[in-house]
Length: 118
Image 1: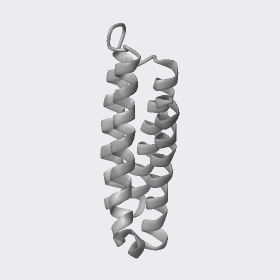
Image 2: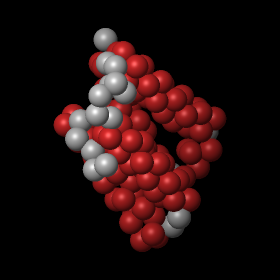
Image 3: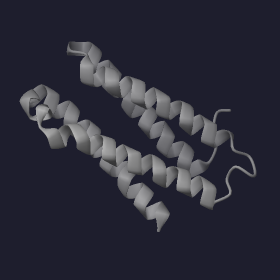
Image 4: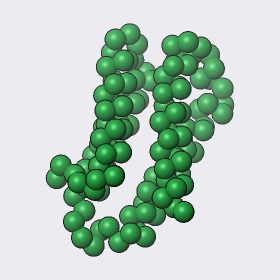
């Protein structure tokens, strides 16, 4: 059940991020809406909580957990590049956006394979 909830929040976070990037180009005024400012934080918080719950429930810290550290490092990259994508303009925005998406995909693959780079 937790895994399904985690997957729902993964895709919700991805849709939220890409949607906000698109809105920042098409209709930036919509991003000033209170719900548009709060919802991504709620989604991402619930995503992190469900992830931590899975780690604890699965006793994944008892064995080889380099993949969890890899996911954490990639998550930091995703956050940094995501913030840059939201704040920068022009080509720099799109470079940061692509870098954030690459981090997101790497997090997803690492979670599925449980094979990190550490």
